[in-house]
Structures are given as C-alpha cells and as structure tokens.
Image 1 (cartoon, helix red, strand yellow):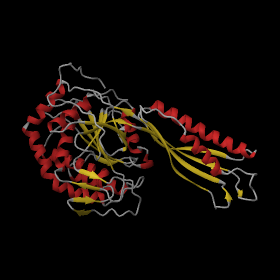
Image 2 (cartoon, rainbow, N blue to C red):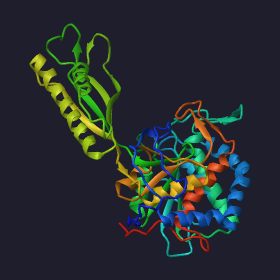
Image 3 (tube, rainbow, N blue to C red):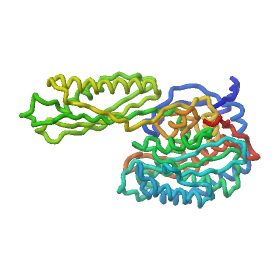
Image 4 (cartoon, rainbow, N blue to C red):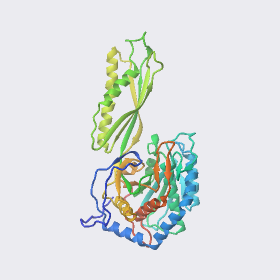
Length: 450
C-alpha cells in the first residue's frame, strides 16, 4: 500500500505507542518486538474531525443505546451450533439478522461465508470488516447461554460471536443515523478460522474479491490491543505402516510402527529453532497399535510447526520431514528389513505476514485508541488477518468490547459491562479508514486490483 510521508515532528499528542506482552486471544498469540512509531498529520486531522462532528457523536450515542439489544443477538447466535465445517445454520441466522438491520445486498457465498456490501458514496477504498462464524466446539455441545455474577457463559460466546453482534450493531446504527461512508464496507461473517478450517473462508474471500484494500477483523481482545503480525503454521499428519506381528513370536523379524514413530519423535525433539523470529513445533497427538502384545502395524502422529516468519518455518519443516524419514531408515536397519514405511499429509496451512507498524491502518487504530483513552498494545497471533497479510494487504485485528475469558473451554464467558465503549472505539477506527461524507476523507488508499 502507498504510504504517506511521516515528518519527524508529526507526533499526535498522547498517541505514543507502547508494546507489551499482553495476554490476548488468538491462535498462539505473541508479543511484537518494540518499534517506535508516529501518527502522521493526516491521521490526526481525520480523527480530530470525526470526534468533533455532531453526526459522529450521535452515531456513537446510538451504539451505546443499541447495546441492550445486541445482547439478544448474542444469545440468539451463540445458541446456534457452529462447529468447523458445520457453520451453515449460524450463517443463515446471521444473514437474516444482517438483512433485518438494513443490509439487503448480502448472501452466503460458495464457501459458506456471509458477505454483505454497504456501498460508500463513491471513489473511496473497500474495507473488509469481519468476524468468524465458527467455534472450536463439536456438534452436541451445550451452547445454552447462562448468566451469573454479571457475566454470560457459553461455549463460543466471546470467540467470536460477540464480534458478529458488533458488526450487526454497526450496520443498524449506520443505517438508522443515515451516516454515509466514502469507501465501501464489505461486511463478512466468515467460516474456517478455527482448528483445521485452515482459514478457508478468508482464502475464498480474497480469491473472489480482488479489490479489497484493507481488513479490520473483530476478535476478543483487551481495550487498545491491535494485532499486526500473522503467525504462519503448517500441520502434518504422519502415518507409519509395518507388517505387524506377535510381540514374542515375530520379535526380530518385523519392525514396529510405534517404535519407528518413537524414534521420529525423539529426533523431532532435538530440532533447533530460532528464538527470533519465534519458531516452534510440537508433536500434538499420537496413536496406533492394536494390543499390548502386538508389534504395532500402524501408528500416527500430528505435528504443529509455527513461526513469525516463513523462512524459518520452512526450514524447521524441512528438518522435521527429514527426521521422520531418517527414523524409518533406522528402525528398518535395526531389524535388517525394509518393511516399515511412513507417509505424510499436510493437514494445516496458514500463511503468515505482517502489517507494517507505520502503515496508515495501524496508525488509525492507534489514534482511535488515544481518543478513547487507551494505550495501544501491538501483538501477533494466528487469525483471519493472516490471509490478507500474506498478500501484502494491510490487515489488523481489534476488539469489539467486553471483558472475556475461558477461550476454547466449556466455561467460556464474557462480561458486557460498558462493552459498548469497545464497539464505539473499533467503529471509529473503521470510519477513519473509509472516511465519512461531509466529515473526513478516507485514510486507506485504494490498491491496484490483484
């Protein structure tokens, strides 16, 4: 994305950026290394205009007034199961709610994403704003919302059903207050963010829409948190196969698939990775064999490899694949045979990337945070933003308000006390990027179509 010049003196009052190892939700969240930044004059001007405009103050008041109604949407959507690859019913409900609050140009696409377009006045950028439909919980999970001690409890209620309800609230108040953005808002409830969904919803979306200029995603996050780095990951399933046999009678004649896998795990455990950029691996699951007195004819394991940069991820992947192959060679050699084999299958592929700290998208979030009294905390993790980042399209993940906890647990909860403040903050971030007719010009620049 083209960048504005940043004069050395252009530091907005109160907009100093603090990097901090925040405890935040994302798949493998991690802190971003400290890097100073400045808010350019164009960003300062846009947000000064927005916060001073009567129409925007009325809009933000409408967000606050709509808060009690958003709780009804939250309960409705949370209590519709949405396991990975089974998001259809929740998608249909979200689409119905989207149309009910005034967005008629909306549909479910071929991958299962709910996609709606709120057109701007013309000539502005197209900004994707999104929250994911899917949760990690399997079919049959009790998703009934329960309230106690001022909190709402239910699997998936904060991750990411709260984000979906904030999108609906934005649509409702923008339409009712007749606020016209300059740029287009592509509003999406997407599939495939969790587990082995492999970001399939976002991958499809960016394949279909070549003219997206930037992305702001909503996920449960503390006030002021801005995700700017997408941690890449590859996941493999390895399957070991041998002839099997009796533990006593066939001993010395056949190799064990489990022994071969054990050798592989030991070799993987010795792989060295850099600490910066952070690169990790783990053998997450194992299984196999038929009985305690059988030389195992089969075994399998799943391996997760992650990094904040693609080059060390690929190098670690290369070492792990080689280690597994060498383990099979050694297990066969131990018994003087060649009957043990291994195959592998890539079961997870999340591309990585980074939105530069000095990009207008990040500075917009910083300046909006300042307007709401928050210090900005930059972070990294694996989210839907990985996909646009991998294409060089600027993307961030921010919160939609509310205190949250228990992610991916049956005890997941959200405290919605004053949560409307977070919804206001993130909406102002979005409005500064796309501009508001008669108030401010867009900060996000249009990109050449991919």
